[in-house]
Amino acid sequence: MTKLRRVIHEKGYNGRTFAEACGMGKSIIYKYMCGNRKLSKKIAKRLAAVLGVKPEEIMEDE
Image (tube, one colour):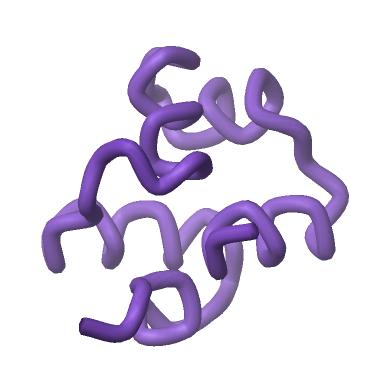
């Protein structure tokens, strides 16, 4: 489970509701959640703001 997926679920979202809250498409959010697409710092900041966490908390370690 990716850090992003864990935090999304901890905050009470699912993929669809989180995508709506972010103003992004479900398919791209699911790709980030599954780790099929790497989060850029810019996107991580945007998603983290919606979740109320720091970007580092949802970005995978490299």
